[in-house]
Image (cartoon, rainbow, N blue to C red; front, side, top):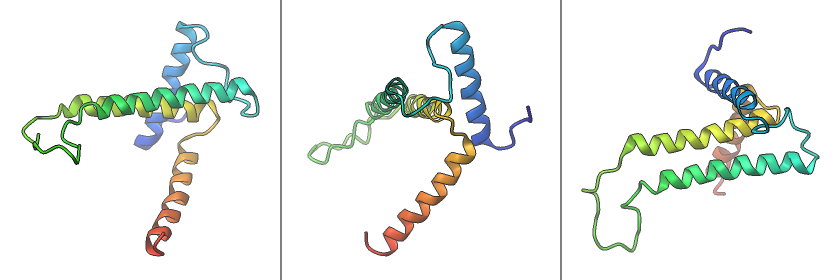
Length: 129
């Protein structure tokens, strides 16, 4: 196996290594993949991984205390633990990366899809979407 050359590739590789370790350590923690996305069980795996990622994002949001527009008191003096906030976002990314991996996507697929979507949203912005 060639060594990873970019950070995104390293992130995918590390997640794949972790998934494989989980499969060996905790039987049934991950299914064989790539998943057949036409199957109900495969779609449930994706849904579960996505919901776990969303849950981690909610945990990150719990660290934000000064966002309510109706709050009269400014809580800017309340510090946010940026390390814990970032850790929860990393947890979310890990679940989203796992979902991509088990469905057969890799870092190139994600990057290519990112570029396509970036072009679409920039055109929408330019054209008053």
